[in-house]
Image 1 (cartoon, rainbow, N blue to C red):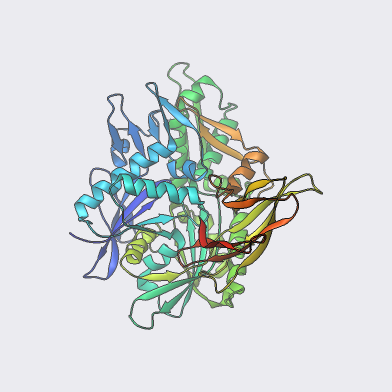
Image 2 (image 1 turned 90 degrees about the horizontal axis):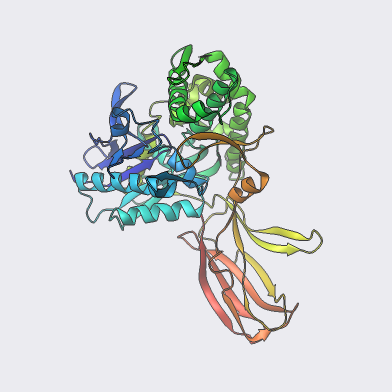
Amino acid sequence: MPGRLAIDFGTSNTVVAVWDEGDGEGKPFHIPDYGYLYQQGAENISVIPSLIHYTSEARRLLGNQVKQGNLEDSNRTFRWMKRYISNRSPRKINLGGRQISYFEAGKDFLSTVLLFAGTEINVENEEVALTVPVEAFEHYENWLTEVAETAGMPRFRLIDEPSAAALGYGAHIQPGDVYLIFDFGGGTLDVSIVLIEEEAVAASRRCRVLGKAGCKLGGTTIDQWLYAEVLKQNGRNDYDVEILQQSGAILVECEQAKIRLSSRERSEISFLDVNTGTAIGVEFTRGRFEEILDEQEVFTELNQTIRRALNASRERGYSEDNIKAVLMVGGSSQIPSIQRSVRQFFGKDRVMLDRPLDAVARGAAAFVAGVDFYDHIQHDYAIRYFNTEKGDYDYRILVKRGTNYPTQGMLARLKLKATHEQQSQLGLAIFELGEGRRSSNEAVELVFDPSGAARLTTLTPDLEEERSFFWMNEDNPTFLRADPPAEKGKPRFEVTFSIDGNKRLLITAKDLKTGKKTHINYPVIKLT
């Protein structure tokens, strides 16, 4: 069946969709070996668990193959890959003398799914759509590019997940309406407000993004809180030998308990250490589960993220009253207390939960088939400079989040000075500024050591800052050549900035000593 392919790579599950020309919509595509059918409302959809297992015989098992083999808790199984990749985690797992990173495991998983689906659907000479979280940095997009090339898919397009979700709810969307997409998945919470526009020439829908906000809070974060609660109630810590040996199994049960508590009032986690005979068990009630979410300020974070997106939308003339419906997507959006909180914010009549798991993939398939949208720059971009008063580095905002592109005319103007005599190379250190999760609680992350055992680790302020400030042009910071060399402290180059239609930051540079333009609309970095 020829068609345009889209893949939504999720932290917990991955969904493949294909554009159906006959029905004019994206539809989930089932891969029997890797996926399984999940009941969503009145229909069964295919989801692929985001899992890869490396056997001792150098074979790879993916998705449902891992579940069927009861290998989820194996120290040779990688899970939560998307989150580790997004955080640029350097962690690796030692498998028989070979060190495998989460970047490599994620690449093996996603490229295999892409290759298999592409062959089955026959996407030769067709574009493929890949989805990206709102808060993704450029390194994540670069990683997706590498994955697509490995799978032999040179033609692909990227779309942010909330915008894809809006297109995926196509049956409910009408031109001229404003929608809020609440995407609470395994790794992130993304909120996007979009306006559906009717294209003047063709009859296809177009989606213009009015406001976006995101934070690194997802289902895996909730799993690690339940994990910590299990240890706490049993008077154990993550360094106990028996806990290390069973950490993977405990995590799997924590995830399952979270899922069960979406439809039940209580769920039990119970383990027996076969070596010591010690019982490890916790019974979670839905009430206690919701208390944990409240203690971790989840509902506060939820409201703040929604309000940041609404504030950006107001700047474009659209308020909360303009929102026709709230479209909830992502596995974590099925948690009753999360749904209740969103309904309290917007009113129950406006909140819809028809396609929590496949809306993003369906919309991505529509996007690659030609249903387009207008977007804006999601992050702030800044120049790093040395602040002599502080005695430390500081940042000057160059591109503000929410900037429309392509820009009309000049975006900013700077004059660059040499920092030492006879300096022949000058440049700029350009940083992408993201948003971390704001919480008064100590930042804790669940990580896997090289043996595959899980441990709870406190994030240092330096590491949190490193994840929020990404040096975009670290490989080429000095791209301006002064000939003759520059004098210390004197302005040598005047640089102006603009953004083109492909989200590239362009510079035009003039050498103030020679009067010549050395660069005209030179692309420096790709914005997100």
